[in-house]
Amino acid sequence: MTAKQKAVVCLDVGGTEIKAAAVGLDGVLLSPIHYFPADSGRGKEELLTHFAQIVLALARQVEGIPVTGVHLAFPGPFDYEKGISLMQGLDKYDSLYGVNLRQELLQRLSGAGLEGLEGKDIRFINDVSAFALGEMYFGNARGAEKAMFICIGTGCGSAFGVEGRLADESTPGVPPKGYVYPVPFLDSCIDDYLSKRGLLRLTREMLGEPLEGKELAQRVHDGDTRAQQCFLRFGERIRDAMAPFLRDFRPQCLCLGGQITKSGPLFLGPLRALCREQGVGLHITADTSQKAIQGLSRLSLDVIRGGTGS
Image 1 (tube, rainbow, N blue to C red):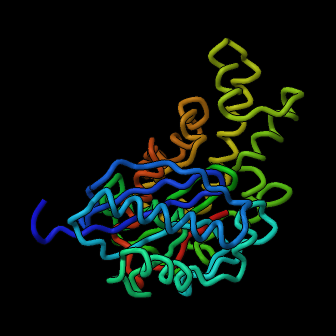
Image 2 (cartoon, one colour):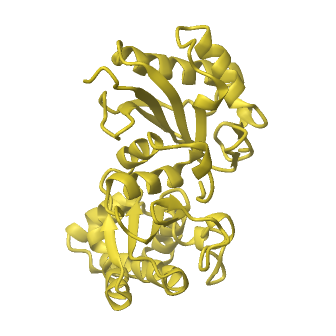
């Protein structure tokens, strides 16, 4: 560590789990990534105390290195510039609806040993946008003039990057707010098909019972050809949903993240073929949270735009 080393405490806040680490401004992890239960159904005071305790625990791990910021990635809907949660009726963080998290956290942290922090030092960004920043600064999208980022989990999150920054939605080929999830697809929208529930519906239709990715992958490994065909159909839907964005935005690379990508070899063949045709590099990120946490270390107010937390 040099005398000039500074740390940022970064939290990737999910609905079931919070991943957190202290990170240098160069993206180097100064602590291991720690995993905390989200307890997202709790009341306002409990949740705010929980967030503050996580930040303070990470700050203690880098004692002697000044903590100059607290950066948090949240799923949407969320007013990232103001730090106000707009999640409601999503079975997570309902009690924080309309709460100014920047003010509330500053009050709790300033009274517990992080007096040097100011409001501007507590920053928020969409979770997929944080992933995009991590890939553009430290990962597979370094040096790409244009890059696209997709995370498939409970929904289909997205972000678009141009020359190392999050793309403005006025950029040709970028959908409103950088959101692909509400774009019409088949008989509804992308989010209904490229998501956990989309896979559950597909397996119910093709196999007679709803299966998650891990269960479906096990069946493939056990030699179930119907399960293999189910994964192929899912992969074809990903290809068909992404094709218009690859055509219109024309990225040099497409980075995929999210839990389901662990089974990527079983369903990404159709998308790989399309990317080869389009001259797009396809990259699968094994640890989406690590890239999101590294991306948070680079967060500044002038990059808070784009992305989705569907």
